[in-house]
Image (cartoon, rainbow, N blue to C red; front, side, top):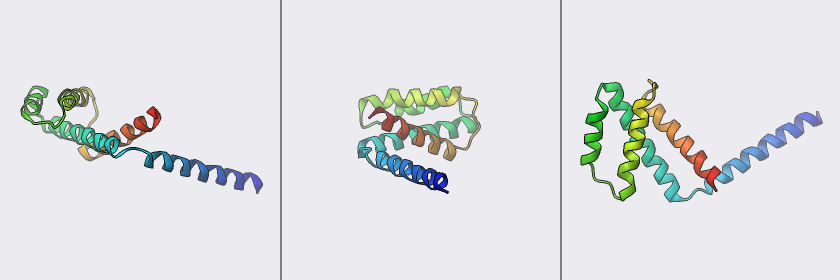
Length: 109
């Protein structure tokens, strides 16, 4: 019985600690992760629709980005998405990208 209670208490503490870390992310980190997730979802949608990487890159080239680093980052995310053999739906790609980006940002701190 004690072992069960200790295990449950440990799990509860770990969950609370992880939640506190996730809330410690800045608004900028959350926005950046959301932006990258959106780019990945759009690239996956284009890939599944049969649009070539070249055409998708041309579309990104014409797009306006608020910060200079965003263009090259969008190209990188798009290329990695096209190189992936994944056939997941864009919504699943968006969620996975966001979750992994947040994990990376938390681990970086």
